[in-house]
Length: 255
Image (cartoon, rainbow, N blue to C red):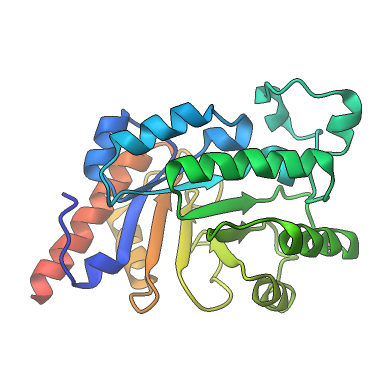
């Protein structure tokens, strides 16, 4: 299913947010995966190295940044945090503050990215993270200081307050890609399209994409810059396979 030549399919990669099935099936059928464990509690680097060794050479990994960087301790996702942190440390986590806790979290995230030879790291923010002056200062400080090691950094904010007028100078100044659900909003800026599909309407994770949805998604791809398409719904693996078949049929029909 993964065979690709030099046509439009070569500029589109399709995968899942997390190991929705066995690693063998994911590596055999898809082009990339966005690792989710790194958001809750990063695995050991030895584990990430094993995943990289198991995957085909041309398989792409991306990963989600540790929640200690993006989310404050009030987030329910902290229930899955296993790191032994003090109350003082927890109070300093999240919201892109640049301090000893978030620097440690970025070093750990970056270590996993290196082990995976990852192509990008996603920073998804909670709905409570609004573009206030304080949050915008935090973002600029964090991304200006954080070592990148050649990685693409993808910013996926949530909420209507993150307008193009707010995002355009931020993404441009900090060299970030805009991660979006293409059924929810259009990406701001030029370059690679990093699409994350959260169901329709967005965040309806039980949604199964229809054939009409997948045709609409195909029309939103950018073949000049390339598109990475990551399904993040309950039927993510099945929907991703259907989308790959759609792309392959379209390419065969145009040949």
